[in-house]
Length: 302
Image 1 (cartoon, rainbow, N blue to C red):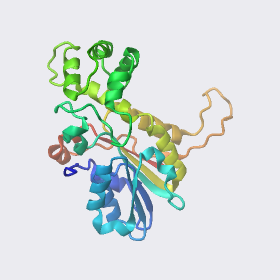
Image 2 (cartoon, rainbow, N blue to C red):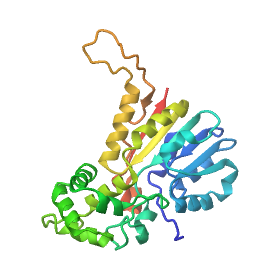
Image 3 (cartoon, one colour):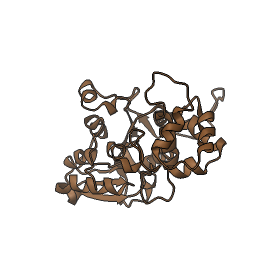
Image 4 (tube, helix red, strand yellow):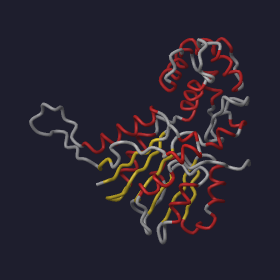
């Protein structure tokens, strides 16, 4: 395995946002290289941390990084959407999610995430999964591809790109996909017009957006009163889901405004701590340009 290099975005802000208690129980649902997990583990005494990741390389890297804290940590190879399957022996005090693709996954050419390096079309965060980017690009109909590129990539030229993908099949490598996109869109000053299409295919391959809202709802059910959810997002689609889900869970009543009394019976399940998202500071942006689109939002159960 190549060295799992990954810059832990908004590290101090996210861990501080969890308000880690020495005896608390926490889940890092996207362990990655273990950067956030390590800072949580350092704050624990008789508490426990579950490090979850669907990438075997991430689990191996996090295990190595947390080798001095193994008595307080349990590693779980799974998708964070399954956190309710973890036996935490009661409620938890916090969940951290750092969404999106890791630097390691982007920089390891063979994983097929990057449009900068030619490699087989893969993009699986879980390398044991049967479904990959190759299936999206080669098996979806033109209409399905158009939907993916439009909805997940916010791509204006989705239909033309989808039409050219279908006409060029089989498409086996990232380089081939890059060339298809480039000849499908008008020439502009954008050096990487394929970026939006790669994001869209990756999101579809890993069901990244589908699982955010259900995971937040599951986490709220698991949280002890005062427990917190900290979520770092990297593009507007993710952030919108997190923002709207937090707002819904904190608002309670969903009756139309004209109703004289509440009939839905819904009560607020928590409160939003961050009315505006927390953004990286200047120092972090200098150290890691990939942090520039990161946003941290925090929710607390009442």
